[in-house]
Length: 96
Image 1 (cartoon, rainbow, N blue to C red):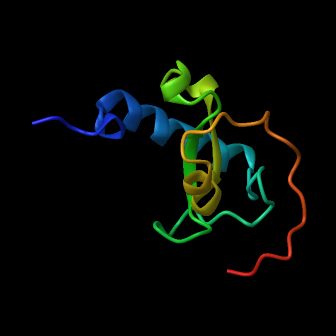
Image 2: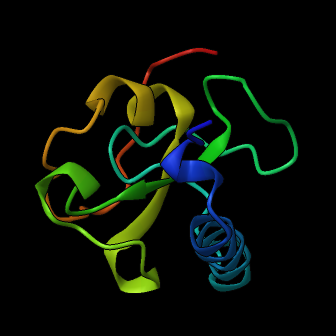
């Protein structure tokens, strides 16, 4: 039975390190939309999720230097599209 690529031990390690690093350096807002990230509750639009900068489908690797932390809403909206370079957080009027 095939497993999800995001279920691999490599991805799990990278994801965990990326989240831990983002919290440590104080990333509090999504670089895509500016919404405040929720690191404590999963599966909500504001949940902090790890996203590939260069998508895996485009040859991106599961490495710490190829990921960033964004909100779940934007991560799901991107759906494997090539991401822009991270930009400074912006204010948003989006209400969750």
